[in-house]
Amino acid sequence: MNNHYEVIGISGDGDALAEVRKNEEIDTHIIEMTRTITPLKDLKATIKLYKFFKSEKPFIVHTHTPKAGTLGMLAARMARIPHRLHTIAGLPLLEATGKKRLLLDIVEKFTYSCATKILPNSYGLEKIIIKNNFTKQDKLLVIGNGSSNGIDTAHYDRSLVSEDIKEQLTEELGINDNDVVFIFIGRVVADKGINELVKAFNHLSKRVKNSKLILVGSRENHLDPLLPETVALISENKHILAVGIQKDIRPYVAVSHVLAFPSYREGFPNVVLQCSCMELPCIVSNINGCNEVIEHNVNGLIIPVKNETDLEKAMQFMVDFPDKRIAMNQHTRSKIIKRYEQKFVWNELLNFYNSLN
Image 1 (cartoon, rainbow, N blue to C red):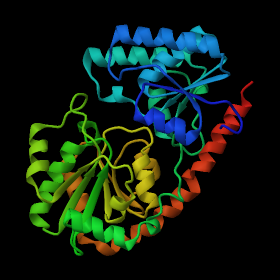
Image 2 (image 1 turned 60 degrees about the vertical axis):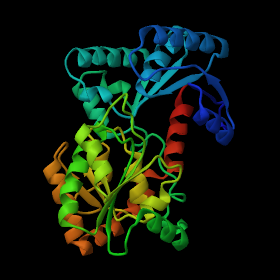
Image 3 (image 1 turned 90 degrees about the vertical axis):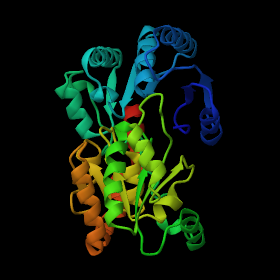
Image 4 (image 1 turned 90 degrees about the horizontal axis):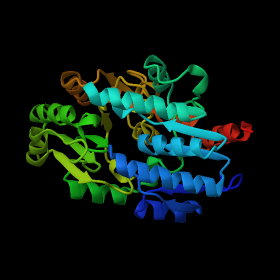
């Protein structure tokens, strides 16, 4: 985008923003935004955004994440920015109930009303938005085949992980040659189906001694804590390897056989793209995004949401039928390259930007 537009990134402060500024060679501006409902802080952030937009007079304001979307779209509308785009990469409100759900529905509709275009990052998400009457069809646009940013298929290539690195990692983790290794990558929180995953694997590991589960990602106990019994199992079960957040997930994927991703909700899951691109079959929930990348019994297995029993059966299938599991590998990487290559998604977004006037 730097070749076509002057790009300014706005975010809360932190190492990630500094990394973006360096890697993408863009100007950045710090405005703190919380991830929870904080009316006074939200008002303060909106005022700062408004003043910044009035000063910079951007042609496009494009927001990501629910809070940045609400505050950014409101401030951009107040500042009369001509093109106000908001990407929807998932709807946390789908798991809310009662008065909280009612409030979040109102905020969602308000955000969409302030935008000139809403960009769901999957076709399934587009259907959910229409079903919930958040906005009208003509305000929605899915870029390309879905995904917010596509995937760098040259980077997510298992051949780039050397045998030495794999041997070192398997030794560190205590993985044996005959182990069947499942991997989860993402936030280790309830919404990602971790409670069901840990319980299902705990049952499996009692029968299948040569099984491992690698959990890659950070916990968010203040936002979406795990059940106490789940935390205890992660600590007690020696077959579960919680390695925390990793800057480079590729070595962990390369020593694994199956991605287990039983999330409750997604926009368009990058981790499914990444692992598929590295030739792993995936067990995923039957939710938008996941069921657009994975075809049942072709490049993975699709299971019902929040279903511990079916998740365990799917994992057992991957153990019992290694030939079928390996056959799925042949239909993973090629599909990602064809439909979700990053440069394709970038060009589709650029074409949309260029169509605005």
